[in-house]
Length: 73
Image 1 (cartoon, helix red, strand yellow):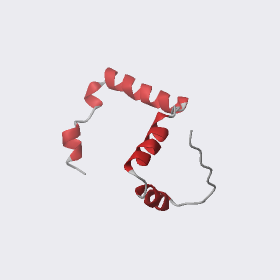
Image 2 (spheres, helix red, strand yellow; image 1 turned 30 degrees about the vertical axis):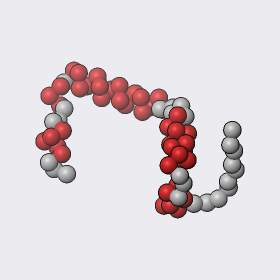
Image 3 (cartoon, rainbow, N blue to C red; image 1 turned 90 degrees about the horizontal axis):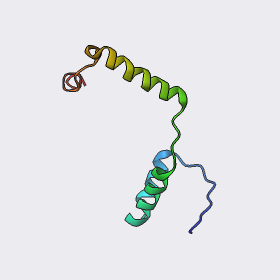
Image 4 (cartoon, rainbow, N blue to C red; image 1 turned 45 degrees about the vertical axis):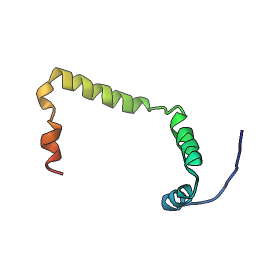
């Protein structure tokens, strides 16, 4: 397995510019590494989502139609 150790400070824009210089194959490797890690959603966030789902099931008229809402953007 390839390893590389870097300890440099970059802004997000600098990092993006560095990634743009990579080959498509290496960009895919980075993408896979970022998104294959198990992302842990905090319990507090899970509770918020579950509460919203419950409220929408109990009171579906509180939901807004996306086509209507998007016209205001």
